[in-house]
Length: 271
Image (tube, rainbow, N blue to C red; front, side):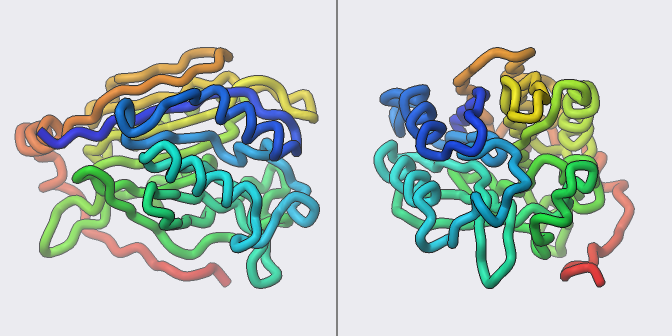
């Protein structure tokens, strides 16, 4: 049976202190590696918190100490490690989700929907492509925080070869506690409407602006049922198993995808 052992890391973050955050995360993960998990998921901007100081905190992809740390963790632990980082590239700044593999490969997704209520759209550039990665027989669509509110961007894109573009949706976040109800509901909605598993990881604690984060990290099956529910405000490292055959059986038993509306998603940057 094809399985994906998935570890959610729900933790507090020290404001704009990459060295301390990376050290704390390494300590929190301890000796965890390929014997226990296939995938470790860290929160959005795990090295800094959700900072709008992009020009001060972002580093070039090739020389970023945080990216090097992420790659080193994946190689050391023998599993994929992923989370988002502030990155500078070509004179632009990106909230970039980095997928680091044990063999040293880096795949990235740049956050598409920028949270204008915090001025993110004025400090970071918009991503222009969807990214699907593969791990242990699962195709995984990458997303970051505010993307979760936009179902068209995350909708399954069927093809002549396959009704399903992906098997799991991954979303890393710094989603504040006052909006914890939408976070939980939207995670479940994306699972149910796309007949996919959902991996959602959010931080806890309080940032430099006094804004609190409730966590509520969740691993959901395609019915929207929780295999992991991180709950309110606690640091958590929790692992559960996604079963590919179980997902396939549910899709065949409840083939709502056969009645889905056909549409095409316009790609590329907005004008």
